[in-house]
Image 1 (cartoon, chains in turn green, cyan):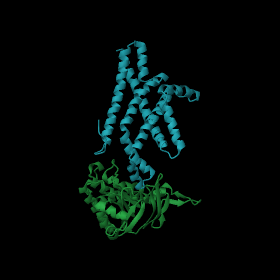
Image 2 (cartoon, chains in turn cyan, green):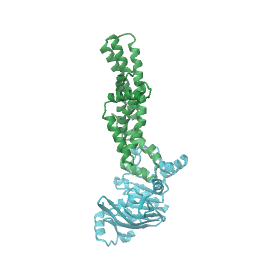
Image 3 (cartoon, each protein chain N blue to C red):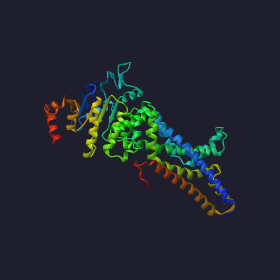
Image 4 (cartoon, rainbow over the protein chains, first blue to last red):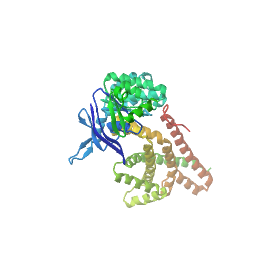
Length: 252
Length: 218
């Protein structure tokens, strides 16, 4: 499980996260919703330390991540090698896919296991083929990212994240950059992952999809969790006036 | 055309090409090291990089060559002009290549770094699998540019008595006074070498511009 306590993050003088507390249970899917600029993406990026944060703690299965108190009591970043090991327990999928353009689809997926986890080449390749088949791209193994549609690229990105056998998957608005007709194929892949009972945190604007897959939804406003609960509460009986307004807008 | 001059010029051209190849190879290695320094965590290391590039880039190659030529015997390094000549070319191209590579690293989009980091790639794999392939593709045209320039810059070494194409041409002219014939021939030799490197570069570009990789050919 993941335990986030008192997370605070600023960009320069602007504080974007004001003490976030959030627990994610094993196998739980949590969706983060909120207006753009509310801090939901920053929260996600703090979880796997693509962003540093000034205060607070993130624990994975009781193990504190990213910072540790020094002898003087002041917290310090963990050494880079340790941060790398911690990152391997998480997979992230970005809005813009961010595949490596100079590698084939299969190489993109194999890279992590092969070089971060020292999995043997044949084993990593077998894993890559299995995962690409799972996201429905067995025919595209030797294609390059630029030859694929956005939806296909995003499915490769999901396979790449899965290849690390992560305990948590982080999704950062992964359907926002897609043409509407391609959103479904990516959402189908996420649906198929639900049976794996892997922890997932998804930042999304697709409230309908969040209702369908998330066990709990966190509405974030001004860098704090303003409302948290199962979709039936947060989406159907919102209490926060900001959330009511937000839902009115996204539902049009 | 004066007898035997074509053979001499050909020999001179071979020497020029060898000098350039040595300088490109040595300069590339030096530049990788320098570019790594440019991205060091330590300000001192970055400062050393900047000072090196400023000095080398801000000095005429001719002056650098003369300094090294006179300094090496003074340092009791009993090396001929060829060693000094190659060394000065390496020092010079090293600075130019380093800036080319630095630009290439800066051109790697932030999301690519983030993808690599989120996979927990160790530094060596990051360098081999992400940085080198991307920087190679981004910088190939400007890299070839410096290579071509190096071939021509090697002519400066004739001043410090490195016998290469330009010095060969000058010797022949002193004997024969066929100024324009010989200089025209020397220019043609330089052109052929540079043109060859250009074609090689284009070919490499095509090879690396794998299907779909952003790299429009001119």
